[in-house]
Image 1 (cartoon, one colour):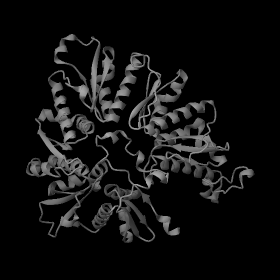
Image 2: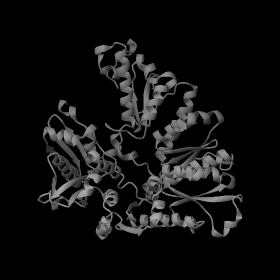
Image 3: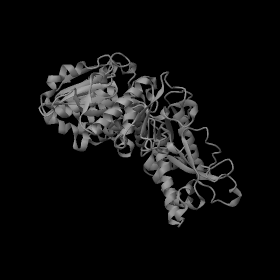
Length: 587
């Protein structure tokens, strides 16, 4: 076992490159099913050509391929979709996955290691359908790289790609006007990264994009799963450009997230990349955006569209929902990745504002639309009570996919499950992976069956805690919980005054935790979240577990436990002697 001591195990969830299709699975939570503690469900999905490759590396390479806090290794794993383990003792890199995943991971790892000693040499056989090569004018290279490579790193992070400058074949690099930038990743990821780079280059070297335009627009045509991948463009005037960008690029981001297409502006050219349906949506949204400058916009046939939700807003709430200079709607659009506007037919123009209701239309993914819609319902309900909840009953759906359940709260339950400034609601929402919104006294819970069920359990436990200790006999069948046994003398320290320390750790890590009794009436801490977390991530159950362990260590040190060391946080041997017979390291 000792040689395994240095093993760092990473399995990355699918990156953002392909989790955005508008297929029925779209509404599932992005990360939820990618890793699970119970071996039952994660084991059978291995590809036929699953295998293990090993790579012997040098000491310097090991540090380089790990990167700060293991970041580089995780990046390679994320982009190649392989699992990568580094045994630091034996200096062996172990790569697991399908043949193509292993090949890519190996290639990326070698590319990363080669950077340590100079420019990477890239030959023709490097492209496994995962490479975009870009020429960057010499005077823009520093700008694109950013300080200490920061700009490139942030693009890699955003788009789940791997990027570096390289030599192609051999040649003297002093005399060159261009450097070659290699971008590795999926079709969508590469395109997002490429356009971001080109957009930066264009600000530094205006007119550069015009030379590349046809090559860029034709790249990867039809090479996605649907076979309809492509790129459309439209050209803006100056004043239009700033409108289409929005404050800090907010409008562009909104277009990108709501349509699902990659939307980027290079100079005065707007570029939409994606499968045909996404591009069509992006173009329509852009058209409506500009039509609003002319006058009222009405989306004909919205009833038959599958990308929008329409809400009737009473006249006296419209200003409240819109906010000063549209601040409230804008914030919601940003939070949920949707596009919203009030629809009016041109002929209604003279009727004045006070007349009845207006239709608010929301565009975006199923999940995003639902989130924004519930938030708005909650706001309207505050302003005119009963508008959305009159006669509403509880509801539990058995739909496995995305749907909405309702629970009705009593007065005292409502304020308790909201928490100060809604912290408790946000916590339950974050840890369960569902959307949880209170419209008046009705809790709306939206998500997949698993998420809805989890969210309701969390609420019921929360309400039960007001009446005394909650008993959760067994969590061995759950894939969203971690239990920790806290030494008796540390309990008060770990929970804090009226649970303040637990609340702090919950907020930091996006989890839900409390002390609960097991089947034998013994108390232990349970950490709940749909996100298992990872060695390096700052959120998820593993992150919370680390924080709790740190607090235990701190307390044991302060108590002058001195050399007792770490084993103590795991052990139960401190407790009264009748339990002393059980194995002390039981965790």
